[in-house]
Length: 311
Image (cartoon, rainbow, N blue to C red; front, side, top):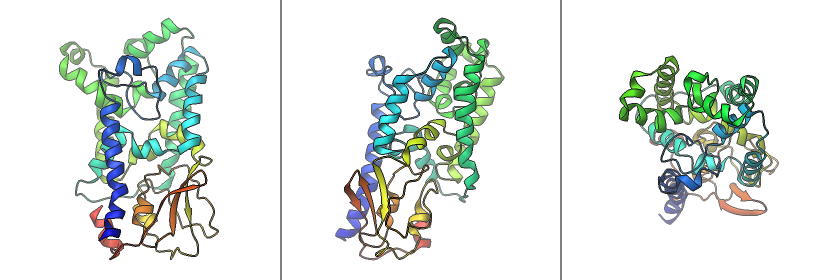
């Protein structure tokens, strides 16, 4: 019983962290000062209660001005080199929503690994290349392009972002009749994309993170060399592949047989694999040279089929 409680504790800790992130990153009273801070979570800058600035929206704004966002690159680089994509797994409000929707009892699907590359294409095209190509080159003109659809915004935030549509677009449409009467094709397209994304994440776990999130693609660039990594002990691993089955982004593959750190671009460091590993000490999470969590053998290991059904 004590071992089972130890296995559940990390899951509760992550859920608590996600709920704290939801409240802390969407506090109206903190938002004026917080807008100067870019944290690697998908939180719409246009939302009036958003406490921090969205890195993707900020990078797009700099691309429209044809300037290099050194501060944002430095902030994302420091976080990425320190903890990889852990913010995606532990703090992102849109990640919490995906986790909640996936718990609905429906038939589940597995996305092909090829969809992982789509978010890199969106990052390259709609966050950097296209805004730079059509950008006004000046701060005044850029601010108009960012907030006014008639100025022709052609970027990820204006055309795709479901998080922005959900947290800023929908509340605005509900509250203001003038916005409803002035809806354009882009408004209807984003609402349709939001419906598709929400439907997809019910069927496939973290589908948006895997396929469409350019922020996830940005953080993935450093996650392979971050200080926060997973490590398998080949002498203790039985190759049961339970860690592969429970991975939300399907980043986990056949456990490493050499006992090396297992860097992967898609891993959000949710630590579900460590929590579910049935062999004591077979799988561990390490921050720099220190082990911060290691797998523990449960009193009565659950069959893989039962575990999958429960999730």
